[in-house]
Image (cartoon, rainbow, N blue to C red; front, side, top):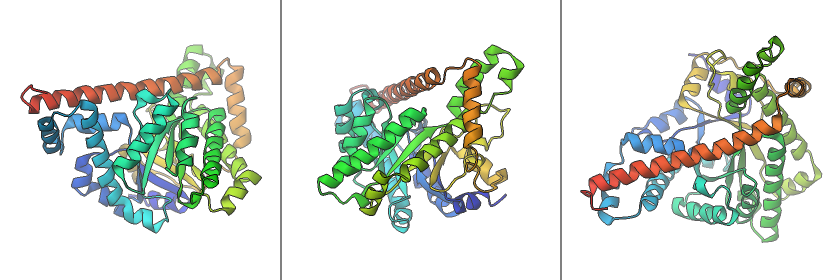
Length: 372
């Protein structure tokens, strides 16, 4: 074992776990991760809940009660998922208190079927915040075109937001603008903006997966030499954009009024290609003021053999831009790739949500003796 996770934390990277289940909460495993692996936050998504509930551990009693009440499957899923998030938030509350709200957060996502409906997304965000009723909750809103005004409105209502499914630099800048606009509107409404927090989840590994596939199809040695460079270049330039925003007069005015920075969060950090180091999207994205949310396998790999060598983003912007330019010269359309990834991201979460509804419906019917 190394002390890589401790060093990562000392470099200013908040370590969050990209997973949650009732068993993880009730067994004490989540508490152990906080105590021993420097974990200070938790993120969830529809796929994570679908896996947890389909495996069944710890959900039988609640499902039986819900089946007896003959609730709809949508209500059942919301009762189950918000209960897990509420309980996890209670486990993380000491971290939240110790960091004055910066960490100790648990994220729960709006219904992904609402990703292209601004008004419904805001309504869902308000409902989730009310259901969980914990100050250390983040409501996850996807960074779709319709999601941007929903982010602004939700922030303006004083609800903290984790913006998810960000793939492009342009969209990331729009997300940061949506956050600042939301803070300005909250301030105009007389809200205390120092209580509002946000992270912006910039997805990493999926960029390499899609672009590497296109480079392999090109088949040239020049193309193959560019494999594994796109995701890091994209994320590093996102951090540059973040630095530009927090250096702006607009941000300084908000910060003076007590506003909190919207930290970049590296998501999708599990390595998909076995040819790459399994800690690639952790060790190469170290910079202060960031969050890295890791699947458990990536967390364990980093703990076991991750090499934390200090800030690995500073000084990389010129090379990162050169790498993206080389991809363009090779005929890879950045705009096409990032739009495809956003569309696929929403579709994958919708599919996971549908699978979650279907499996929960089957359980409700089984426990009600087929009467639901």
